[in-house]
Length: 177
Image (tube, rainbow, N blue to C red; front, top):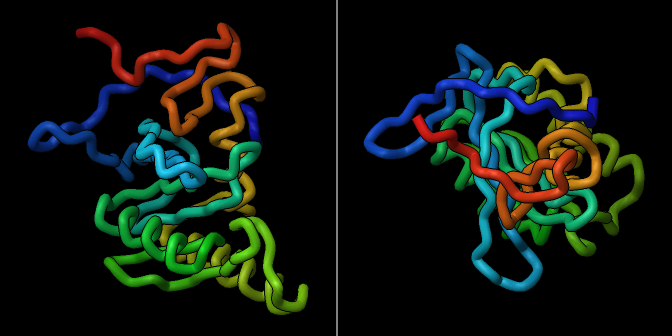
């Protein structure tokens, strides 16, 4: 499903930092601009991936193809983002600080120079590794790739922040109490 819906949820904050809540399937997600070294990072929360631990990341993120990372653990999210940079793009799964599966896509972060059979095997491996983390989406990296596409309703996350497609404007992640 590539459509998203706005939800208002209470969130965990620990020492002033937003935390994922895997028991409620509320995960941190970030979109990191990767083309101009602008330093822009959009931050949000997502529900529906089912991760209980770890992180997943991808440089395939329609249409801007920035780096999208989501996860339970901030350290694992950072490890996944760094691994994507090292591979010059691709898909990655991290569990407890360890990269468990990758699919390198070194051509613009979108394509591989390897045979289709090798890429297909890598895609299967990252999908399986994501399921080991608790992800219950059949194609998690496909779903991840559409979280940052700001033309499909309702809310999307870009490197510039949370975007409301209905009002066609950026919106705040947090509501005033």
